[in-house]
Length: 448
Image (cartoon, rainbow, N blue to C red; front, top):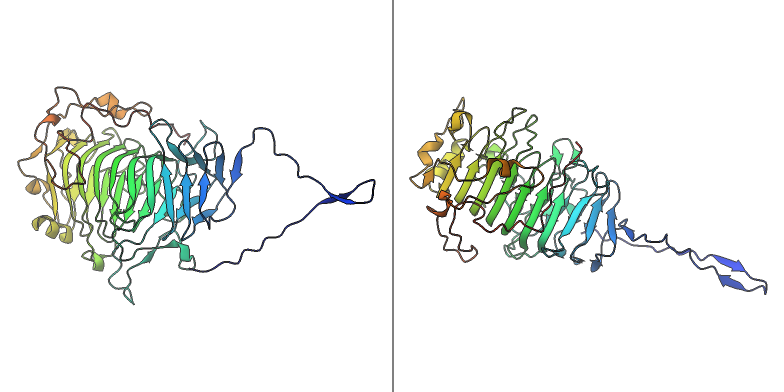
């Protein structure tokens, strides 16, 4: 890490009194009620943001929390980003952002309420030291990479390593909204981006809302997450790449405002590696995800929107899912991914598909080349039936309802995980009769 020399220049203003002495002139008082703190400098030492102040990241500022520093954020604190700004927790730094259901921590734009726009700022980026996969053609071989929106000239942009249990801190009862700034062409930030983040990190009760790109994206790592709401983002709701080996449970993806004209906007999008020669690179993308409700917009005709796309050699184990209301059902692609299906390293069980695709087929149309028959890999635990969700409730932009009806079939046919990370959940989908999103989530609408 490049060391910086900080030079503090101080200027004393003095006035000459009647007695000829030089008396200090006191600094002017701050404007009444102004509690704004502008974050002009990188955070190099342990720092606490308090709820009685508003913190603003200046325009185009890449605000780095430097290695060795911990940023603690109190419940109820609001952090705002001006245009093109981003908050980066570097490898070796920590963020301790633990809100409460009554006082969530909010990361949003510096625009006025009611006038916020999608993609105005870059959101929250966390870089860790857990394993990732890289291009197998790279020379020399490496265990690290630079985040795609940065150049190698920015050493703070590196992530990845060998510490599977790396700890980047805590995000709990946190909302991140209206991010996804397009830093350079086709290299956008997301609402929440996790790169090489390790399993020592706590991620629980998180909402990523109204972004122009992905709601959440994992670039490798071993991070685990529970109670996630990815709502009304423009691209994918839940994107995984570069060998993510984490776990997730209780996931809501409300992909009802897709922007699929430029590229497909999907519920899930899972890759192992984007370079064909590295589709089989290790570690393999191989998450385990239980209890997810993934909602699309069946009326969307502005582009392409799949319930899920699984490709480029990805693996993964998915159970207790509801895929509901997408223009196109889940799709499996390419020979490297089919090899994972055949080996049982990409599997789907105890799940319900409903109202996906024309005539509720739940299956995507055949691909022109190398088509994979998705139905071949759906066993007897996959049901194509109404899960008892409210069609108006799941499509609501301002007050969505993801609970199933009391008489719903989601309360049978579920799988019970044995891994101690997962909670016992006697239902298919993200929730039963208890709405764990109540009280701390919010659904403000963008103006664009």
